[in-house]
Image (cartoon, rainbow, N blue to C red; front, side, top):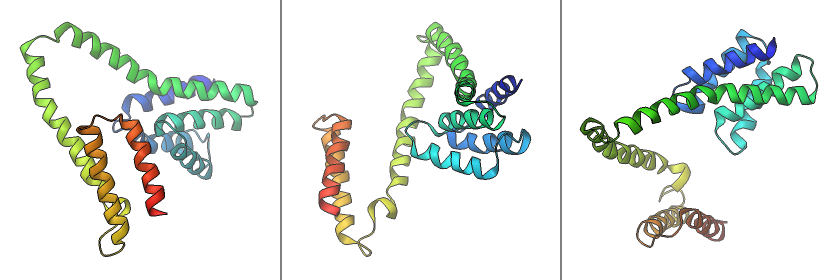
Length: 191
């Protein structure tokens, strides 16, 4: 019965968890700690910390760990707890999968209509604007320092930013390779 409840809970979280993984955290916390008492507050805090450190989306990582811990805390063994983590993870992504299949079918059907083309014409500059806004939000003192606090770090950070933009935009260097180059340069120059 706990598996059905786990599936329904995480399906609802996936269906109504707008804003990505960080937006889902409060829903996951409410459902697993307060509503169903599957986890304690300290266990949930540990799960969030682990989810942020592991690669992948935080919502999916949290669902995986919550599913495992909920089943384990219910008295089941390790293998059954793994099934609980798979259940929670699958239930969390299922609404998005269903919606994307429906949207892609509609998109393929109406892709060449003037209305859809106009929508995409309007979305392109908006997406560029959102990416530019995210870039500007990352240009803060934690990432670049300031010329007053640490002029060396500020200068190196600005130089790496310009070099990376030039390398990926003009020289067409693979972005993953450019990230590795910038990380290596940062290690050499800043530490």
